[in-house]
Length: 410
Image 1: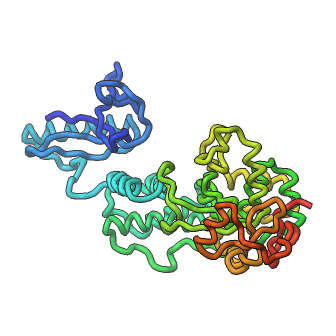
Image 2: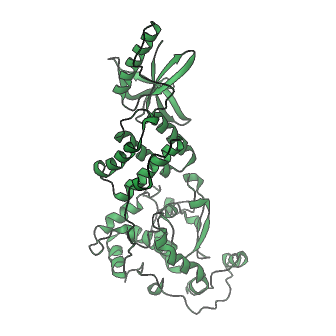
Image 3: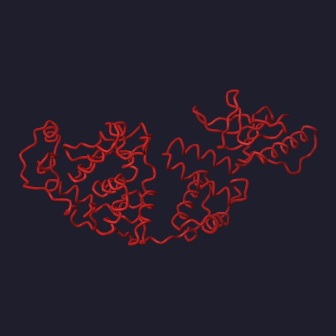
């Protein structure tokens, strides 16, 4: 009875078990597998033993290390040979009636990858990798309360994660165990604790310092966050066709080309002031033709790809400002998923004062108020704005009132 070794890898057709490549020394060549009769390197995935027993095909996960997988194959082969010879095996390697932790993790991550967004899958993958590092148990049913407490201590002491991050990773593992039908292992007081910190905002002088040291691109980005209230992922996926300059509206739409959906699967339209539209127009004029086309991303890399380092760049820019020891995550215009409450007052102001704040785009900046329905929007689009009842719109220095911190430089 022959025991084979395969590796479960990612292919364009999905997950697939592929034979490993055996080196001249008879051992596994790490990360190399045979795909359609070709040798390919795939560092992802786990190794599996593959054999037939009682007319049925059996598979067993043996981890991500090639040497360990080879040793497991040798042991399994000896066990099967001994059993076939009529010998009694007192300590078999594997009990197929029990689920291995690694196999459960692989199946759970595959399901998350198929049903959730990539960012969610990446988060679970990191959390469960830490679990495998900290837990020396083999089978899922062997996990107990002490293993979870050791996992929390591992995150805190070995990985040096913050209390909030420890709490989030711990919650990911609990979700994984619940999905496997595991009983509740911990009590309410066993959960890692963290302190809910008060949100601080930048004052006018701090915003001015930030704009003074950052590039025009990032200055435009921070103005966009403040005056639109968009979340980080939403700003990352705005294209130029989503900006309706004549109606003072920026649309948040589903982007299937990026495999991205809005939060809560709801599209929306956000009214914005003329000041922001002027800034965006200047930004668009500074871009090459490829990055300024209608379907190009408003905020992108030099090659036109999504800017996935908005927060990282903000932290870098903020490191040059000595006046704010609290860091950039407390800025009011960073309306990310982790801090949506900071933008609430601004959004309320946007929606409930549209008639007095927003005007149709024209050279005098004193056009008509934002239209209330689609018929009025059509008249604005066709170049026939209604007669204005406002003598003037507020300037940048007064926008937005009742919100501490101005996005414009003095």
